[in-house]
Picture 1 (cartoon, rainbow, N blue to C red):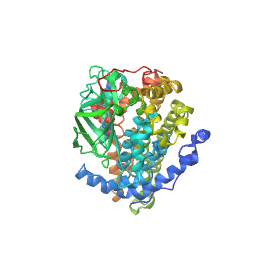
Picture 2 (cartoon, rainbow, N blue to C red):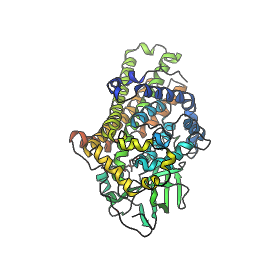
Picture 3 (spheres, helix red, strand yellow):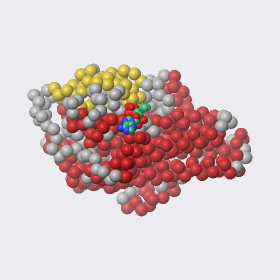
Picture 4 (cartoon, protein in one colour):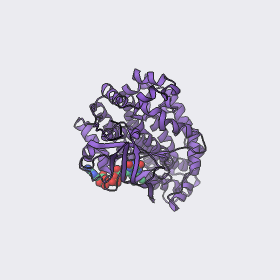
Length: 489
Ligand SMILES: Cc1cc2nc3c(=O)[nH]c(=O)nc-3n(C[C@H](O)[C@H](O)[C@H](O)COP(=O)(O)OP(=O)(O)OC[C@H]3O[C@@H](n4cnc5c(N)ncnc54)[C@H](O)[C@@H]3O)c2cc1C
């Protein structure tokens, strides 16, 4: 294994971080990046090829030791708000962590990324979610049995279509959440769900009326120990194999009313906001993949006798300069998207005085009546949505989504380009580093597919930036609310 290139600070990598100084604690971000790099070098990179080999033979093989090691570093609580015991990170922090992990191994990074995607819809529930599963996830983080999450949106007949509120209207949805007293019965199949076979909790989206999927798309928090839930199969993957992608089946699985995340019918808007938040980190995943390939090929050129003399050749210098350039631009895109989202589009929510006041109430008080009752009430859920409407706008979120989509799509293409170029440079000569580069090339492909294919993401860019359109992406102020026997009204 060749050595890694010298450490570069976040400011060197993202020069525009300086003007953000007042809003961002740059020192804290630097420490986060540095800690993650140490974790990646000590735990992730040394295991990457072996895990890739084992999961290639048996896709259901899973390295829980790595999850435990990541848990000790706070990887599972990164996005969980501080009042729930987490680090309170936002898209910016998630993106910084993802680039560092992916430069070592994108498959292992995806375990933590998919976990974060599972957590994200719960964050939209505001303080009402802090003392439930979010707190449980943090408590498990440093134990022998850390809990993972997954997020299930994709269905066998609907992938791209369920990632966009307009396409959702005509998507071929086959799942259904049927109202019953006290909750819902979930039926159907979800496909390609990262962490789906290892998650303890899953946030998943289904319509409560399949004739009107967009209007009734609803997010549920599912306990994977529930009766009727099954892992039907784990896919044989080309890349990012360390993280299993599973097909999940739901046979009349009961989910109580209190595990409806946010409110019935808010799922399409929630998905849009979650994707706006998760696409900058996916841009960072792609940037990390490209950087990993670049660092490996540079290390090989500098140190391996088989590469002697190559660095003096101008075509090699030009190839390296192009890689550096592409990686740099991909990073600016994802950091722009993440900081815009965290501090402009959604900044008003996180800094809101009412939310801060609730955060100062000790957890013990929040968990008892009368506060617990209020936080779990429909009025509290409505108040969280009203806060979103007061502090941001559909235009701001649409613009943010477009920037996030640009970062994701461009990053994915850069990952393919750079891993391919790195492989071409080493050719057949490189020995062990070739195996790492081949793996990164396989890993790169997925960054063009998940979180919406690059085509879909570019359509978001067209809509949100080229046409300055505004999509309906905030949950309605007045929700669907039907009375059911024994259920919440
Ligand atoms: C390994 C892996 C892990 C994944 N993890 C998760 C996960 O954790 N959770 C989850 O919910 N999903 C996950 N996915 C699903 C992923 O998000 C979908 O694969 C993706 O959204 C594409 O959907 P699809 O595969 O059905 O392709 P399709 O939607 O069938 O698309 C096929 C092709 O048609 C193009 N296309 C489709 N519609 C349009 C359109 N309207 N305009 C232009 N082009 C279009 C697409 O760009 C693509 O090139 C994962 C997928 C993979 C492969």
